Image (cartoon, rainbow, N blue to C red; front, side, top):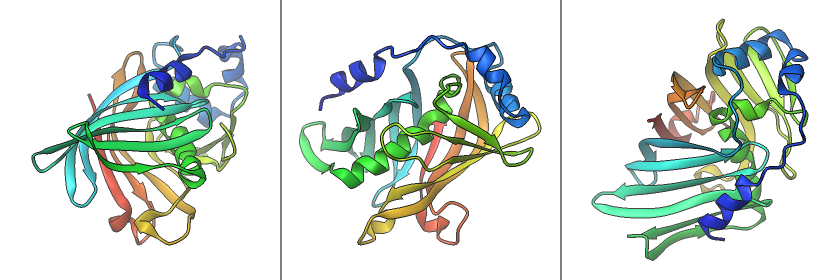
Length: 241
């Protein structure tokens, strides 16, 4: 699938006309606090959200990248990037669209380097699509998403785009700022022989006002978050700009 078709699919307006403000009133207080903090100027319009990200990603070694993330929590995502492997540019994208996830990467944008698809890759990509939702908080006020507060600083969101429905855990502070996020995500980190559920998440060091919404500005994510293997699982340090 090409990136233009993916973007076209993610941009289709499927809104049902519900009142987001009325729905917000029904949420537990910590969840309301999260949204009040991240939507300081009210609920912005628009569906498909684009966010520019840069940083370092651990492939063979840590490598610099610049990218654009297109995210819709209820549909999927497209992440297109240029990664510098030494002096060599590798260009490509990861995506989840119409219940299918895959990745395509090429040296100089021409020579195939890696490609992955299939049922397991799609399940993993669906989990990622929901994790990327923190870059589009205004789209998380939706009747299809179940919000709960486990305590004053620990809230969860649960929904399914296709089949995956593991809850996403968010740790917020007294003001509602996001500090940590994690979930059980389908994958094979470290190239384990069989796919399974592993903890995926990370910490948010700073937030930034970005087109009317507060989103993560700097942070780090990876597999086995909060576990002893985190040092091996962390692979993505980013900055929104």
